Length: 112
Image (tube, rainbow, N blue to C red):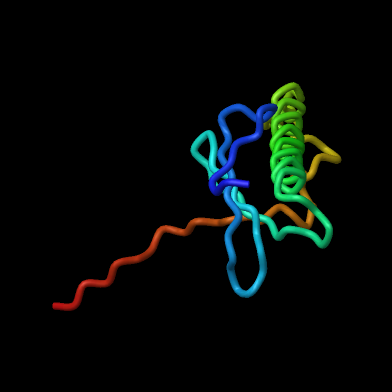
């Protein structure tokens, strides 16, 4: 097997086996990203490369679908003043969330 190698069913990817930190690993280059995974015991380089790209594809699809679901959910309407300050609302008189600020005009004393 030559290094780097290509798999017929994974167009756009190139793979190579590398020895890093005392372990044989498969490194994939394609579509602007670089992935690396250890070669499992009894696994051929081509099946390790296939497993690596399949895992990354599954991960990216799940991220895409999660993003799509979040885009489809309608945002909650913003509460209006009537809802916030109405009797029984979160900021009604006597509510622990309501902080009353009383502004008193500061007195200026001029020293002569």
